[in-house]
Image (cartoon, rainbow, N blue to C red; front, side, top):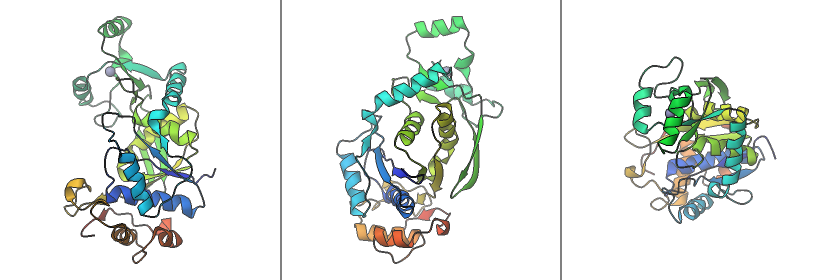
Length: 295
Ligand SMILES: [Zn+2]
């Protein structure tokens, strides 16, 4: 294992678009340019959203761009015992509590200002339930979610591309009220279990990083470093989406997709992942969102 071991972790819920694939390419470039392992993990904990055949299609698209990965692809749905063990460890430390709130209750509670917590953050309503109210909520039969008790901790980190970052951690959910482990818990447990040293992912996830670092510390797990890469926008300036059309390898040939990615990464003219790897310099990467016009 190396401190630069990296990963790409898509949700197999549909076809990857060129923005997703560009992030996969970047994660691969970061890891491979450091001589490190590159792993793939399927974040398939939401059975209602997983689409049959999607994982295979996504892996095929990565391979079509010339990306390779080490070892078996990991599926989160087959690792529930790991997440259960982490929840038990948090419970043993007194770091989780039951939350019975409905979405509507959370929305109205979080709209009021709550000290240092970010707007929309859960204000800890259920942490302050008295014994009688707690017993009443339990007896009512609505299954609780589990939230961490983070005490509005402030967590700072240095992002390799975005520089100094910091956030206040709210009492986020680690087990949903349908019993499924929540995204943040699974990511932290898996990155540690897989030995990931550097998390390279889209800038849309930068706000979840303080939560994940807090959780890694709470669980006594190693903290990976981070590089959040600029997003890809459509011609209208909105975040790239399927509605922009011609944005997947179903419509765009792999060579054309690579040609656009190479240009958007400041390496115009490169025609293969291997050539991009030879020329890759993280310090020279554009820091602005890329716009996908005509490919
Ligand atoms: Zn609650």
